[in-house]
Image (cartoon, rainbow, N blue to C red; front, side, top):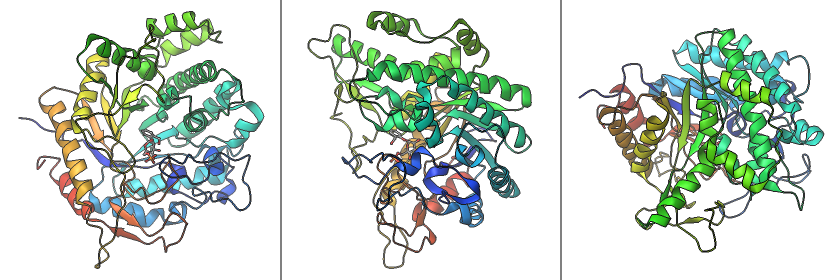
Amino acid sequence: MAGFKADFLWGGAVAAHQLEGGWQEGGKGISVADVMTAGAHGVPREITDGVLPGKNYPNHEAIDFYHRYKGDIKLFAEMGFKCFRTSIAWTRIFPQGDELEPNEAGLQFYDDLFDECLKYNIEPVITLSHFEMPYHLVTEYGGWRNRKLIDFFVRFANAVFTRYRSKVKYWMTFNEINNQANYHEDFAPFTNSGVKYKTGEDREVIMYQAAHYELVASALAVEAGHKISPDFKIGCMIAMCPIYPLTCAPDDMMMSVAAMHRRYWFTDVHVRGYYPRHLLNYFARRQFKLDITEEDLQILTRGRVDYIGFSYYMSFVTKAQENNPHLDYDETKSLVKNPYVKASDWGWQIDPVGLRYSLNYFYDLYQLPLFVVENGFGAIDQPESDGVVNDQYRIEYMHNHIREMKKAVVEDGVDLMGYTPWGCIDLVSAGTGEMKKRYGLIYVDKDNEGNGTLARSRKKSFWWYQDVIKHNGENI
Ligand code: P53
């Protein structure tokens, strides 16, 4: 029985704002991540009006990868990484977002970073926009609610595609573009789209408008990228939390279908190049007036992605509700607990089989290559007396997920490009801004308050993952 491909991309994943720090170095501008304070489980991060004195902004220093990347990449190489997924901080290249010319110091930083990866034959896998757009685009333009953002993004994409043409082959456009399906909370609209809602606004219609402009921008970037280099593989990036029905009652089943429609139509547009019928009907029923032009629709068909990158951490469950004849989905109210699985300390339901299900779901629908670009276990790690973190729970989580992923490849025939566990080195949590929600195979000495030496050390999972890569997953 065949296993993973010989050139399977084993690696790890991070995002610029969650590890680089250096928030004002090399001419970098302020990003949306720079105005978010630290929160905790159940305590949302505060989005402040600019950078305010006396607040704790964990992304400003993060784990100081900006100055320490050489040592960190050396550790990734020691684990045997074939690839390294990170993002380019848009604010290093276009500090305000609306400049005409890129910032050379920012471009140089990523040249150096990619050279360092290539030195070890580590293939960079690059996200263009991972929760870190220029804050100036929020204050001056209202974020992605404004069509002008399309041009700014495409200029940014063109600049980096051209500059790194010979160094980077694998790209993704917008990280977890579908998080904003949860537009009731402030986090996703702000991190995905730089959207801050005013009281009384119809949040939902603004979300659809912003997402539409992003999808057009993504399609234009894909089209431009393919012209710049025919070797480029440009994917989308979807946060995959499949939504199961609580029971086999037909109404529960249909509610899960409707919920999946609301969370995953983004993939349809990225992959097929057009809006699904159910969504157009929904827009009509809700009488949404959206700025979607004929030209936009043409662009969408031209800029279809080459692969589907997705994150997988957990699955969700929904059930039919009373007085909901149209099966409307509200992510803050429509989800219930899964009685069959356990959850992490942050309430994320642990479901390895859901990864196999997700791989089948995507492959059945689209028949495009898939790439698991995030997966991992956020946990509190405690170094033992010898200083080593014995993170058996993380090993178990990853082992179980890789095993299911392997079944999807070997038994179900899914075309899988690679696997990059999230936060391969401890970094700042996106959702909570905490350091203590750790995912790493490498420990970083820093706590929630910002204390610590920032020293790096190998966790038990480091050696375990090194072995998995060495055997191309055959020992799982
Ligand atoms: P944190 C929600 C649901 C699934 C993935 O998340 C999510 C989120 C947002 O919190 O985000 C992705 O750090 C994201 C990363 C993030 C990672 O998952 O909240 O792409 O930036 O760090 C883990 O525990």
